[in-house]
Length: 150
Image (tube, rainbow, N blue to C red; front, top):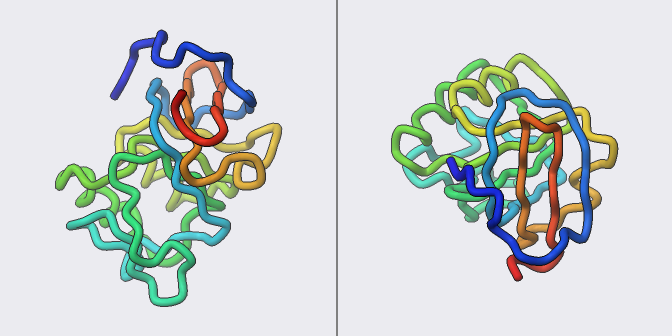
């Protein structure tokens, strides 16, 4: 997890505030979906790739990215799949989600990455895939640079 606070020289285009689920600071490229994600049968823990047949991210990997999504769906196997992805080093480096469920909460804890929810702006509407995001879950702040790192 990255803790350097001097990572981007320019001012962010947007700041979103939210509630910490798991603390920590990191930054990276966003991968955004408007669809919930199923852990069991929806992602490959070996690659971090979304494999759910009708998902808009099918074929894309969240490995090493900040995953911005509505929340978790499916069985309690969600956290186990994401834990296996973490062990394979194919997990997201942070989570930002809208709908708090036990699956999303437990998944955040087993991933051991910064995670936030209950944002003052809908992150799915304001962050796009490819945007550069810095999440400081301890401070409850998400900084967004539109169009990627500058």
